[in-house]
Structure formats: C-alpha cells, structure tokens
Amino acid sequence: MTVLLFTIIVLLGAFVAGLLGSLTGLGGGVIIIPLLTLGLGVDIHYAIGASIISVIATSSGSAAAYVKEGITNIRIGMFLEIATTISAIVGVIIATYIKADYIIVIFGLILLFSAFMMLRKKIDHSNNEKTSVLANYFKLNGSYPVDGVQKQYAVHHVVGGFAMMFVAGTLSGLLGIGSGALKVIGMDNIMKIPFKVSTTTSNFMMGVTAAASALVYLHKGQIDPAIAMPVTIGVISGATIGAKILIRTKTDKLKLVFAVVVVFLALQMIYKGLTGAA
Image (cartoon, rainbow, N blue to C red; front, top):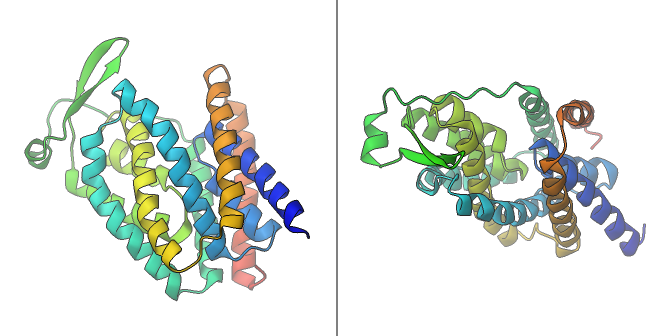
C-alpha cells in the first residue's frame, strides 16, 4: 500500500469515526483504533498515540463551547484531573510492560462496556438534599443554566468519584481513549452531579487527561505524525459536522446500529488478542 493511499484511508476512516462518535457520544477512538490495528495492521501503541492526539483536539474544541455556556464545572474538572492525570501516566507505564495482545483484549472489553453505556437509558441522579463535607471544603457545589435560570446542585461522595477517576485515567493512558463513559459514571452515578454537567465536565477533562498520556507516548516515540495528523484532521472534521447534525437529528436508531458495529469490533479485537492474530 502506498503512503498516499494509506493516508487517504486513515483520513476517511477518521472522518467517519469522528462523525459517528459525535452523534453517539462515544468519541472517535472506539472506531479509529480498530480501523488502524485490525484494518491497516498498525501497531496498537502507535494507534493509541494517534488516538490520544485526536482526543486532545476534539476535547479542546467542544469543551470551549460548554465552558462559555456555563455548564461545565471547571473546579470539579480540575479537582478530579489530579486523579486522572496521575493515573493516565500509570496507564501508559503499564502499556509499556504488558503484551500488545493483552491491550487489544482489554480494549475490546472496554468497547463492549461503552456499547452498553451508549444504549443505557440516561437517568439524572442529582439531588440537593445534602452534600458532603469534602464537597463543601473544596467548594465543589455549583449551578448551571436551565431554561435561562441558574439551577443549584450539590456534590456527594467525593472520595468515591475521585477513586473512579483513577480507573478512568489508567484506562485512558493504557488504551488511548477519553474514558468518558467511566468519568460520567463517576460524576453522575457516584457524585450525583446533574447528567448535563457530568457529560460536559467529562468532555473538558478528556483533553487534559490525554495531554498527560501524550507526553509519555511522545517521549517513547510512539506518536507518528504520518498517522496522527490524518487521524486528527479526520476526527475533528467528522466531529464538527456530527455536532451540527446532532441538533436536528434523533439518534436512537443510529445508536443502536452503532452499538452493533462496536460490539462486532469488540469481539473481533478480543478474538484476535486471545489468539495472537492481531
């Protein structure tokens, strides 16, 4: 395969990944890494390096809009980033010492989990009846605009949410994904933060977490510009168009179809990882 053909395939694949990832809320990494490893035979470490760069770019672009609207809780995001940034570096170090086949199997399992989370009915777990001592101490309680009115919310179980961020950051560094599903679980289900605030704050955090991982992958020489550049351009382009389509599109059926594709890719990666055929 020529370099030009490889670049075109990666660019188009990344565009589709960004488009579908934006419409379904999963991000582009769940598609682009299987495309690079299963479809084009790229080493999993270089695929992860390219995916991390695209996560930084897409998170930076979309997070700015949510911060401007006052939905994202920057204080919570930066507080939890202490856990995700440290653990992301731990994840990168783990990736150095375990076999690529194991990473592929773990990635497949995370894909299955992400597909389940995508189809799961979203429930707002927030309540303002009480808050935690730590939330008061760190001033994490906040408010966000709802129909032009600022709605107050309280933060709960700070320690549990912080612990979940260690898991999310480790997987982010290990697999080159944003770990948005786990971050939302930590904030929405454990810390009882409103779902809208949880998702936008997770989006804000993904870029910072990925930046920590990227420094290590860059130092190890596993970020190849020839792969990372078309991946980033394609994912950003697809995600930008996807965000515009999302406003006027019902995505329930699309999510179902996308979930089937993700499950198929997950089973492929698990099989190839277990058999050493990757």
